[in-house]
Length: 119
Image 1: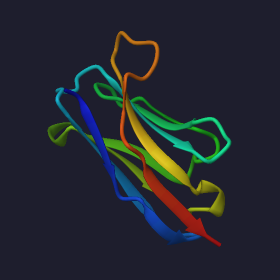
Image 2 (image 1 turned 90 degrees about the horizontal axis):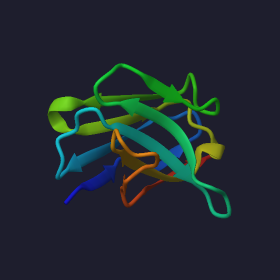
Image 3 (image 1 turned 60 degrees about the vertical axis):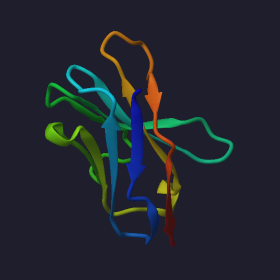
């Protein structure tokens, strides 16, 4: 059974930093894709970062480019989202998700972790 467990959310002042972690169990990642999404009430879930497990290819949305970094630790089956220069508009529930290579959408989701940025 595949499980994704996020950690690292919390309350931080504007300009501060947080690092989110997402540990994957039940599957050895190979040519899969990991994504970080965020969602605020009344809005659609937004993809903010994506990384391919077997290549250096990454994606960052325009809203976080230059401030966030996505990385992975293959040995730990863990993906990270390093967030710096946080803004109040980054406040959201952040989810990690796993998309299998053959899939057209994300197959597995974490439970979400709250990030709150105070002004």
